[in-house]
Structure formats: C-alpha cells, structure tokens
Length: 376
Image 1 (tube, rainbow, N blue to C red):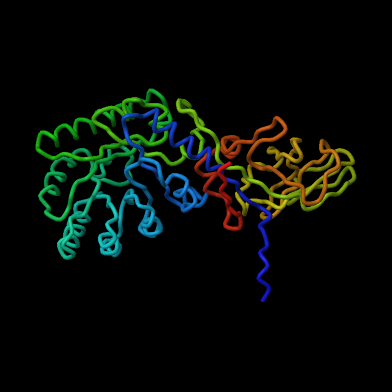
Image 2: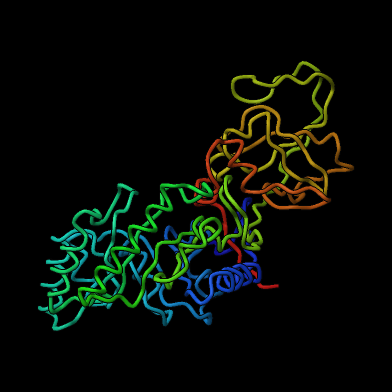
C-alpha cells in the first residue's frame, strides 16, 4: 500500500495568533463579565481541537457546544463543557456520567436529568434556558418562574446558570432586544427574591456584545461568543470590538488556456468571452464552500492580482480571468478568502453576494478542505 500523503488542493489557514487576540479583545470589552467560548459544529467548521488548543490556557468558565458528540470530544481539555439548547433522553446517562453541564429547556428534561443524577449519586450542573423571544428552545417567560422554582427543589440538579438568546441583536437599538434584556433581568431578580441564585447569568451572543452593552451588565456576568472569535461580524450592526479575520481559504491554479472570442464558459453558458482571453481554472467549487452566488460576480486573488470569476461556479472547479496576471503558472496559489496585493476578499463579501450571513459561509467549507492552524 502506498502511504504517501497527498495534500488537498483546497485548504484553510487559521491564524491562531489572531484567534487569541480576538478572544482577549472580546474579554476586555465585556469585563468584568466572563466569556463562554462557543465551539459548536467543529468550531464552525475550522477544527475544534486545534481551536480549543489555542485557547486552552485562557480564562473562561466553560466550552459550549450543540450536542453530546461534540461535548465528548472536548472532555480532555481541562475546562467544563456545556451543551447549549437541548439533550435527547438517550443522551442523558452518558452526559451525566461525564459531568457535562446540561441545559434545562423543559420540565420533562429536568425530571429525567434529576432521576439520572439520583441513580448515579451525582448532583448535575445545569443551565436554565429561557425563551424570551427566539421561539426555539426553553421555558417561556410566562411560566419560567414557577418551573425554575419546581426544578430548584430537585435534589440532584444544581441550577448553575440561566440564559436566553437574541434573535435580532444585529439590529442596534432594537426595541424587541431591549425588551428581552429587561424581562430576563426581572426574572433573575424575582428568582433571587425567591432564594434561587445562579452562578452564571448570560444573554449576550456575538451580536449582543457589539450592539447591546446592557446585555453584559449586571445582573449578567457572562457572554457567549463563537463567530466573534473568528473575527467576523454580522452584515448589520456595529463593529464595536476590534476583531481580526482568522481564516484564509486557498486553492491552486490547475489549468491555464488562451481561449478565442465567443467561447462560452461553464454550465448554462452564462458567460461568453468578448475577446481572446487568458483564462485559468482553479481547483475549488461549491463542494468546497464557494457559493454559487460568486458566478460572474466574485473574484479571487492570484499573485497579488484580482481575477474575476467567469461563468458559473461548478462543484469542483471555477474558471477565472488571468488577464491581469503576469506569467501565471500551474500550481500557483489562489486566495479565495483573504488578502494580498492590496486586495481583500472577506467572508462578509461572500455573505453579501449570497444574501446570507458569515455563519453560513464559514460552515460551508467542504470536507475535503484541509484545515491548518499556525501561530506566527
């Protein structure tokens, strides 16, 4: 068997130094609040273990993920691991066994977790989830108080935290978001009067950090951030915290041809060369995360030159103009997201073209895209 390693033709370089800087800048901007590091979906597709290694020595209370499998992967990092949102009944036993911090989003879940804690002779740390307007998970504000009181009587559950989530914190000044903050603050105060106190109280996500200072003021003492660590912002809203992009998406030039005027390019023949043109083909397509919306609109950078995309992006390849590139060579490095030669292509640029948000773009990098972390 041939054990020779074959490198991918598409890769992401992740700047660990920028990641660390982003964490510290966010931490400083919300001080004295703590920062809950959100690493769900494989750290938004960039590689959760490398991501966690960069931040391992930093001061944060918990690593947050979306599901049990993700939590299990991080148990050896020396930080508490928390599942955001919900757990399935069949996941509770394993989660309790491994001391994973669990969400409480309904009373039946709390009863199951309490029963498992009793069986294992453990007190299970949990965060009480409040649906203050997201409409997805958690106790509705109308019945959150009485449910929290009932859960507080369960001997094998420790109400270690309480949190809610914003649906439109990317809109500065949103009355809806401000009303969420006020209502959750009142709930926390009412529960405190009833003798129920939470070590961690959080409502701010990355957008909240940038747009709603009230979301990281008392009674809140923690924030959650995921996309902020990646150095990107929502297309709306403020950019209050100084963040640096951490990911550069690259590929290679795999074909160079001079084609005559009148040649059609790609599926659907959506582009026809107006003149004899030097064109190139790069080894990346929508299977690697390049949005179809880049077709005939986006660009890449080759040898410091901005090269327009010609025709429709296909699954594995994309055709570009090389008219501005002096002496291009097969194998030349191509920057799809990143900067060089005074040009910059950002995640936000792709999100704008696709009419989506940066989360969608960064989570779309395909499985054959290699991830490399570096710290210099």
